[in-house]
Image (cartoon, rainbow, N blue to C red; front, side, top):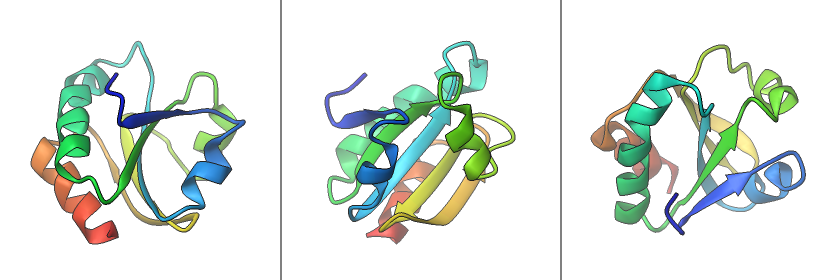
Length: 105
């Protein structure tokens, strides 16, 4: 995983999303579409440096996934100061992720 994508868990999730704008990829290691989207998410994180990018493995953090209504993975949620402002399910292209991140600035 790229150095500019933060790995989230129950211990740091709330504090990370409370600061500024954060694009979070809700994923699982066994998920095929998640693996397909991972390189696009990484490239988007390099392109849009004004927004933080993070990943949350739903397998170990089901309570957080439930809190935000994540029913399928991958799901990408944009948070602004702790509040979800955009949410998309399914594997997204780099351009789609960049577009979501740009709106969150």
